[in-house]
Length: 369
Length: 195
Image 1 (cartoon, each protein chain N blue to C red):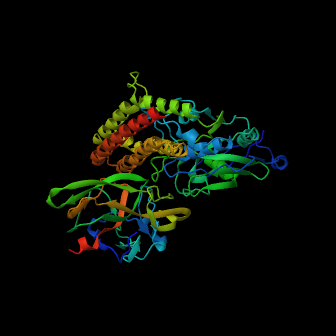
Image 2: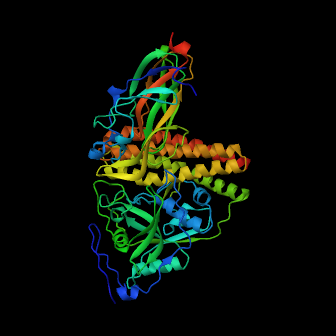
Image 3: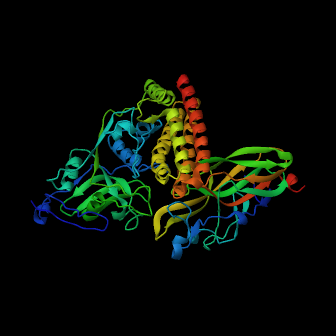
């Protein structure tokens, strides 16, 4: 067995067990997806939605419909991680199923086999027709604004591996947006980073990357018909109005939202910085989801001439827009949380009103579908 | 769309409320801190500090952009008194740290108060979600330690309706630090504003 060791600041030695000698690698043909991944971006979205969007599109699906059909409130106490792609998963081992509950999307976190060249495993994935989504630390990616500046856990789509030239082809829809090759050395440093705590980014650093990648499977991606849409919206509304679970697990629905907001305000008043800080990464998942769902309802409302659906969509988007006040207040206020408690309470109350109105609007729309 | 020749405009003086540096110059990008990441507008790509500009036919007095001194109001419920009068619209040069929907309180003579929506799009590489006019844009973003091409920063021209037929006396800005206001101007019918 041979290995190539690369050391870069902030990363563990990027050992590549099983990496072939350069003479052998020179004979390897590059592996590359058949077409360039879609760069699909909306300003409220994180890399979680934009990378899945590329994979959904590559499988022939509509990212807005697949990623926008689900809408819920879900908080998992103690689960929030400082990653741009944090999402409180309904299915703990299946992020894809959690963010696209009304379509056949499945995913699981994977790490390369210990005795293989990790890039070869990614190459095999691409050769098999899949687009792996790799966790990375922005600090090591030359195309990210944070390059050699800030550590942050991020996702990119890997759509090609060229072992002969030591290149990895990556796609990232988040501005400034990038599609193209980077040096394998840089990719491995980002992929293997410990993502150390970084004072410049308390929200997305201090979570190990550990060469994780998502293996995503997209099944039937046909558009939802009217019955399918009605069923999806009914399930979403029921999720908001259901009685809270008594098992002490996830905090869901409108009751879970109230409980979460009460906890945030109480934590701020008590000087609990960590809970207030976590509003920012946690809220991103809820904000992105609401904005996508609202956009989908408005879009379908236009396509099918359903004004009530357009109005419901707009009400749901207002939920997303109201998350900004809470998230930004928490982001600026977490170092001195007691001073932010009153503002957090104000934004929390407003957010509850917006959720209530939006759930009622969607409920009305379902009745007219 | 009205023009400056056909409307009565009252430019608001927000200087005493400025509490944030939203624009910086390339030689000192860390001077700006529009958002929590320390990003800021590139002043070199904006109109001159303190200049008068016209957007959507409405005159505005720009703040001291790029001077290192506060150039915008990061909204936290500031109460801004205005010259009492009848107005139709409050025009704002504003931007937001992520897109925002909130509200302002409009105070009228004799104690009437109306709450009106204020919607402002994200400043960071975003479209005009709420139908605003893109008043100014720096095609690049200032980060604390470098200048980043490919990430534009937008300053929007948004407006808030003044629907009550009564003399407006003051406005309270949103209790929302995600919203930043650089300039504001009230406009109304000539015959009303010139009473």
